[in-house]
Image (tube, rainbow, N blue to C red):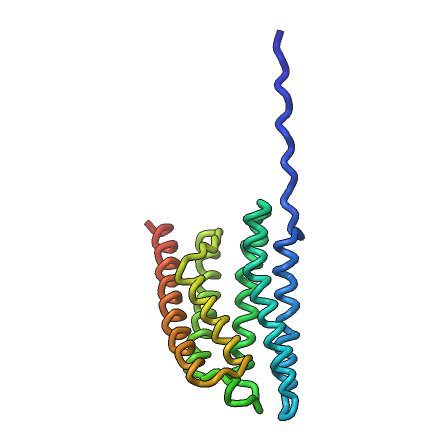
Length: 202
């Protein structure tokens, strides 16, 4: 007599709208709120920077919290792995652009072009490189590394320092460190992309 093997248990599909991903979407929604506060600034409306600072810090908290919850609850999904870094880029790049190029900002809140341009250039290069790797390999796996995480952290601290209008003595070291880590992480990702392309040609 042949015994019928029991059916394998059905594994439920990962919910793309789990709590970690909801926090990521919240971070995306906070971006226009931060930018609107900065662009609406005028002399005598300093409270707008206080609101922008509070919103930006809230967005940074969601960045830390969504990753923690995804690991803690076992809710890491391919969708979350894709949307989380995109949300980070949207938040950081938008803030760097507006704090560098928006008119009528107080000097204590402005980011110099020599800091903002490397940040923007790196992300443009990474976006273009990611598209090339994806078209060549049909796959794109974002692998976070220590340098990339440190770069994101320092960039966020730089933006917080500017939104808080800290003295130049507090902002200048962050400016220098931001540029150094941005260039270092950019070089690391370019080398990783080059190795991925070299692997398919050999």
